[in-house]
Length: 136
Ligand SMILES: [Zn+2]
Ligand SMILES: [Zn+2]
Ligand SMILES: [Zn+2]
Image (cartoon, rainbow, N blue to C red):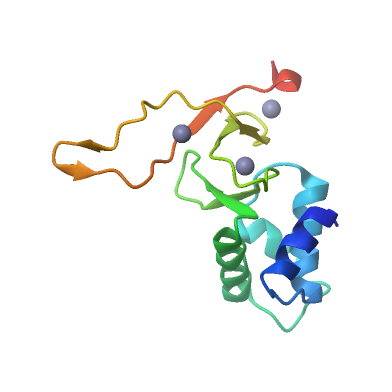
């Protein structure tokens, strides 16, 4: 597994169970966004005791840790992907609509405004969709 994640998880006193490690390894191997169902398909042979709800729970925990991000794609399924940038810098993500590959997108052109329409702005999120090099 990527040493970066391990370091980050240890810093946050996050327990790295075999199942959590297997989830992250799968994301590393597949190198694209995955649904909880797909992850469950891969893991259920090894982790017979755990069900899909456990997978959901762990995925949401990883999102809180900033290791995984939620990805919007067509359809009603939920997707998750690895975020490779753990520097804490504000960035966005670009998703290949063909293969589901996800990369960090360091450029942000959102204007640096602090308030609008009576709102005090706290944060923003944006997903960029495209077609990756190998799918073009
Ligand atoms: Zn990222
Ligand atoms: Zn692609
Ligand atoms: Zn931004």
